[in-house]
Image (cartoon, rainbow, N blue to C red; front, side, top):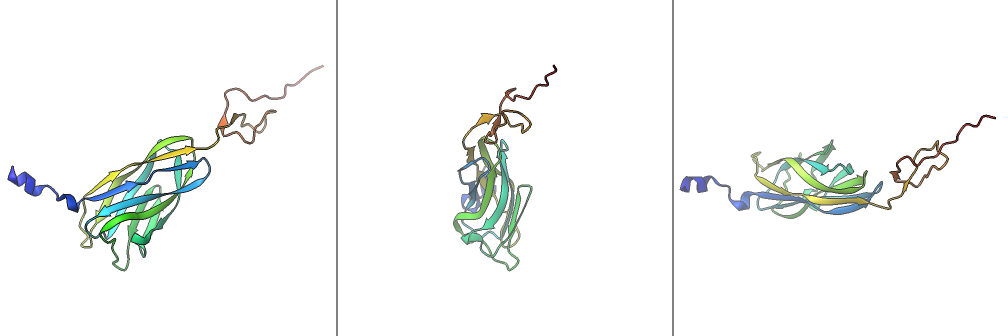
Length: 173
């Protein structure tokens, strides 16, 4: 039994990550943060950011005070951060990435990290734990006809109605 305990990671070696909660109107943008609590230096990271259900998209990513000088890259929700000069994220707590998102669909979604890879200055893998955040996409819900060919087209509608569009009828005399 002692051997099992010796192999268990020290809780201080586990890097904790979380995503901040946010709310945004559909079509508008807001920022969410990826936060890190770490007792050891972190030299680089990679993770996927996802929204379930899919109600938002990533518009941009940027560094924070903790990751100043890092290179950031994002594609298809995968974010990679590292330093070409050997800089590290010092031990501490706070945001490491700021993500600008745009609301694309109404509803609430879990904003979660997956496929997390963290490395220490020696290039070794670091253990991590991540907590999801909550994203609410709302705004004024206006139901109406969204077909521009219809007589009752509503340019302010944000949700299509069921069979409410009215079309001209052809009249024969």
